Length: 295
Image (cartoon, rainbow, N blue to C red; front, side, top):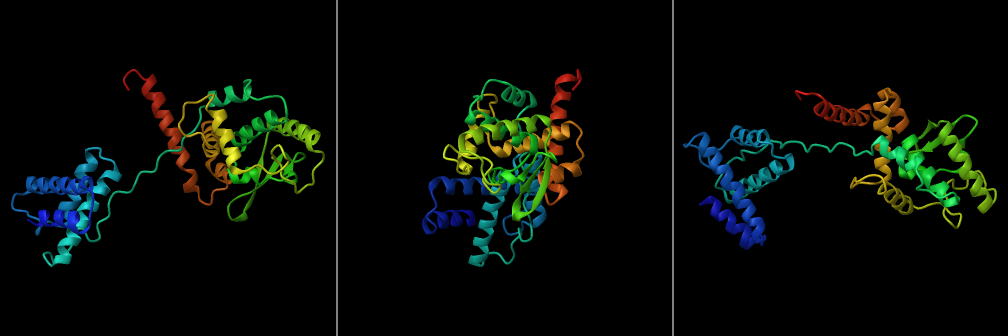
C-alpha cells in the first residue's frame, strides 16, 4: 500500500517519466523481496539500518557497480522521505548511512611501443609545423607537463645550459622539470625553424606558436594530440592528459622514485601520485595472467 502510494506520488505529483517510475518501483520491489528473504516478519515499518546495510553489501558482493548500488539506495531514501513526510514513519532507517564510494577509474596511458612508433616514425613533416607538432608530443611524453603549462611556456622558460624547463602550474606555483639530450635536440631544431619563420622573438614571447606567430590555443593543441595519437593507438581517450599519464606510468615502470615523480608532476600530495602505482600493478597482473601457466 505504501509503495503504491509513493509510485502514484511520483507519477502524478512529481510528474516523473514512466521509465523513472518503473525504475523506482523495481528497486523497491527488489528490496522488499530481499528483506522478506531475511525474515518474513520484517515489513517496511520495521526495516532498520542493518537490513539496508546488508542489502547494500549483498549487491556489492554480487559485483554490482557502486554507481548502481547508490542509485538503488537513492530510490530507497526517496521512499522513506515520502513516508516521513506523510507521518507514516517516525524515523528514517537510512539516516547516517553512506553508500559505497565511487571507484576512481585508473589513468589511461599509451603503450611505450606505440609512443616509440609515433616519435620515431614518419608522422611529422620536416617543416616548422612538423617539428613543432613532434616537439609538443615529445614534451608531454618526456616531461609530464599539463596542457595549460605547455601553452603557457615562454622563450625564457627553457634553459638549455641547465637542461631544465621552468613550468608554471596550478595557482601559479612554479617548478623545474629537467629534459634529456633527445628533447634538447628537438627543442633546438624547433627554435631554429621558428626563428627562420618569425625572426628572433623576445624572451617573454610564447614558446609554442601558430602560423601567425601567436600563442597556441588549448583547443589547437588538444586536437593535434588527438589526431596524432589516433595513428598509433586505439584508445578512446587521446588527450594531452593521457600523455601526462603515459609519462608517469613510464617513469614508474622504469623504477622512478614516487616522491621524485610527485615533484616532477607538481602534485601537492603523494596520494595523488600513488594512483599510478595502481596502474603499473594492473599492468603487472595482466602480464602475470598471460604468462603464468596456472594463472
